[in-house]
Length: 450
Ligand code: UGA
Image 1 (tube, rainbow, N blue to C red):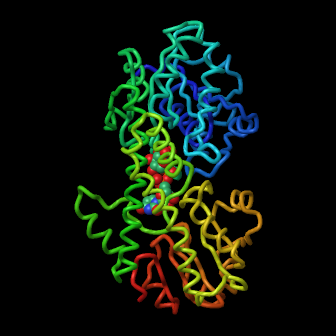
Image 2 (cartoon, rainbow, N blue to C red):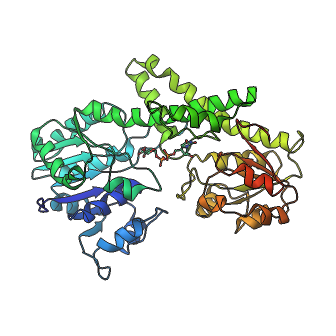
Image 3 (tube, helix red, strand yellow):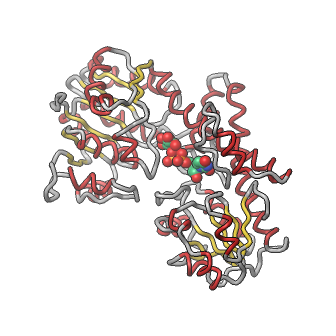
């Protein structure tokens, strides 16, 4: 058992912050979470989660103070002075979205967090950045802290990127693949080893680096993942052009463990709040550093990815006979950027649905968890309460987010209510044989027609 005397604060309670705060409480620490959005804090104080993330609400209920039977180790505030007075270690978990109309990411939330925290740091403290930032930010923020914290150099910075996936946030945080810390002192390293003692003891590798490497590990990991997806989507185009089967191809190359099986599912590509904006921000930063040539390949990764969405729309048009979408009824299964999440940020599914809608198609969307968010960002689409209702009367069904619920659908029952048994699988995730047996024409990108 390691010392639980360390007090931890978490600044920013979105996906990353809310999960990190709950996980720190689970590890045994006293935790204070902060957000500047009052409503978020009110919800979290009731152990309610502002987004859908499996297991997170249970974890909060176990620890949030005031919840019956909880450990009481996790509390929330909107007050930076309270945070500074409480914590030995402050994790900064605010988001860094893509700037409107630019590739670069928006650092204003990170900068605002440091500006709000620094003046209150009157005693020794370790500030740990977890947000995804352009390389070089940690150097800059360390200098900022030293200058603006009353305690000066004793307000130290460390950089500790986060690799959690939405939908698996709790598990990824408690059992990370690796823990990466960029540090400038033994004290910082020691403190972080203490914080992560449990996962380290359970076998998570602990990689100690300098600041720029820690920042780069994060963006390069996401760039690699994006590259894998666009690579297999490019192969899907080659299969499409030549009559090959990309699912078989992925399986076969994946047997080589230097390549690996994961992240080789061809389809309408990657979306969400991370991969697309991270590769763009990475390119923007490369340009600022005069190293843009190193990352020009990411532009192609991005283009391949964006092209997939258009290709799905064209596939649907061809399947419907090649004319305009006007008067066609299109059922869309899935709105979120991936399953087990209610996140529709830069969602390929919603983008495809939107394009067809804007071209005159009569689109009806169903998603198990993403309906509220989808309605908010795209209120003019049609929405149905169940998959069956979405498919009722449809001329074509598009499977665009691979929820388990969709794999468990009964093709025969859907065939009864659909106007035509025409299915496009934009995620290569349904069983073609099953649907074909029930009389459906099954089509997927990069796979033979029958
Ligand atoms: C991603 C990374 O996987 C995390 O490690 C990282 O911490 C996170 O970004 C982040 O930077 O915060 P996430 O955005 O939750 O996590 O989603 P992924 O599971 O990576 O999926 C991204 C997109 O790729 C989804 O739209 C998914 O449908 C798509 N995808 C994934 C494919 O099209 N094919 C695949 O084979 C795999």
